[in-house]
Image 1 (tube, rainbow, N blue to C red):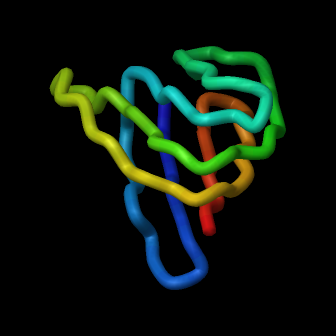
Image 2 (tube, rainbow, N blue to C red; image 1 turned 30 degrees about the vertical axis):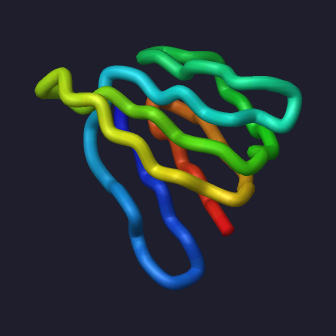
Length: 78
């Protein structure tokens, strides 16, 4: 599964991951390989993602939106 975290200024992350946990506005949720298509708003918090080497990474955000489709997780943050 591919994760892309982008802001107006830069690409914060782009690469393959095993899982992504996001701070949804209705609660935290995790996206795994072959997840159903999804569009959601994000609240302030941390994005946790496990890369293909098994290393957990964390990116703090103040909010944004996420689109999940065909094993691509696209996160636009502000």
